[in-house]
Length: 448
Ligand code: GDP
Ligand code: MG
Image (cartoon, helix red, strand yellow):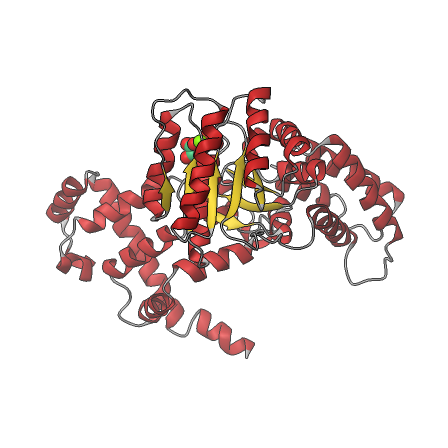
């Protein structure tokens, strides 16, 4: 991915005393390749690289930063500049209901994102209503109804009265939905639209008519980050016709590391407003340019990680666990299961590991993320679930015959149970040692 490639090109500069034409040439060439291979548009790449070169050559070498650090900083700043320095505001109309029009190709994530956005708006005190104007596919309208129900948002389903599915019906449904939202005291109407595999004139016509009718305060283009250059092309077509107000990049939990973000922003000029990071309604976050750039460059995204932890984790519980784990008694399998459940709330292990920097002490973690077996968590939990309370409190009573019973109960093997117990015992011991004057505490004393 882009981050690994950039890291490699920065390595070339390490240990060099100054930035010279010669040593930067090679690094720039690699940065260029790294960006191109990560779906960043050619014009964007050339522009970026020439900016970076100009800045780097003008940089005084007397600063405290090494040449490679200086280049990293320059590249970082240039990418942030390209994406726009600040998090883009979400606009609403002065006269409710504000309308949000969702645009994009089929499968890009419009329906899923409509739900995520609804949930996000609800959390910030709005009362959203959802409507699907995809009259061509009953299943699409059903899908939105299910999504709306799962987040507890209002939905306008309307009555199609067996009418022919065409743009007139689409517009009628949209008009009714807006009236219904106003009647229901909903301040925001999210309009999920039909998608096509390819841009065609009927679809585009319909989108233009919807825009004219609804005068939306946001026209969000939903782009699948995994589709790279294709997403960039369709973004441009939609933008030329509709003047997009923002972009939502979905499937950022996959391998795409943001090259498309850079290109779409450059080509349309529309700011990226949100990221989709999974299939569930809460796998959704506001887009912060500096954070994604850090992620792209392999500097990790600790800010997002902390935010997620703050939101999902119970601080009191975590502190209790730490206290107990470091004490002479150690933590029980019950406590262990509790911690596992907490971590699971933060999202998939893969998405967590990916937010760590891919340099320094975390080098290799992002790669490790590729090999994480998410099911392993579930297995560990079911093994602990199959234990009796007594066993969870005192792992030493878990004899061979008990292990067999637990394996049977949890649908695992005795070897799985053995592995878990061994790992648990190791961890427990490690924590106790740290608590007992050796590890962290001694270190803390040294620091203070
Ligand atoms: P639409 O045709 O544009 O309405 O797309 P959908 O909302 O139906 O999404 C298409 C598929 O992509 C579904 O299987 C979604 O669960 C999946 N999807 C949408 N957003 C994300 C995301 O951010 N991450 C992942 N992993 N999957 C997503
Ligand atoms: Mg859909």
